[in-house]
Image (tube, rainbow, N blue to C red; front, side):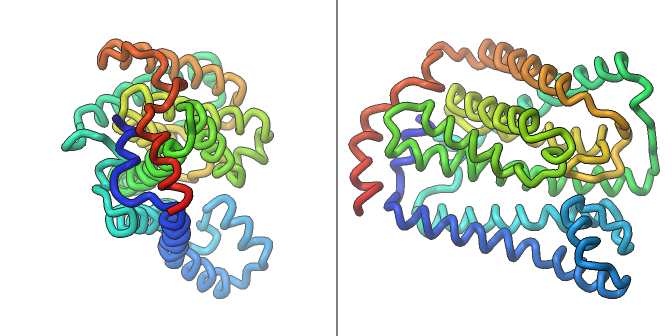
Length: 321
């Protein structure tokens, strides 16, 4: 049902191209406050171009007097701009309810989103406790009440908009769009997972730990979230999991090369990327086992099998109208 809803509304190829352009413009507009503030502050401090580029890469703007919480908020505005643009395009260009990117049902199942969030957060905390037991010397606790309250507010109120945008654009918009012309479900799954991984290519973790391990992680995350979406016929679990991942990284544990530099409760001095990969795949497997039993996933081919015939009949409409 989730992929079948891709046929709703207007789906000519030029509408997808126009939407991508408008969403890109929305992201740029959302990024303008951060860009402007950095330029103004950097000019006042007399920073060089290389110093400004370093700040842009790490999003650590403390050298120009911008707090980590404000930096995080300004960085997230780009995704808010993209999300608003995507909503406008789906409703007015594709002429379909925005809800269809999340669920084929009449209403969004918020309980399922919160269940996915809570279960993945619990698994993330459990995995981190294992690392803490093995490498206690790598962890340092730091707590500043005023900073933490600000971080918590941004993380709970704004960070989910960033993670939801990524889910809606990759596992919602792209996956449904590709399904109109793809014969098998594994094709949109593979394409969106690879694109999701490549989107993170510029993250500082890639330079710090190498492209091999980090791309396995990011593409693996994309595959995991894509499988959840296809098996559950909705984006709800994936939205919850993605939000839990980023909120955990922002609020609880951070490290020097993290994409989000925050005043998290714990700082890790040495990151075991190989161990982190193992922890992710074990947690993902446990998550799938639990939710498959809870939501009774009986058809095990839903993440790789043939796309239903109605999509094949609509291929000409997608490519030639």
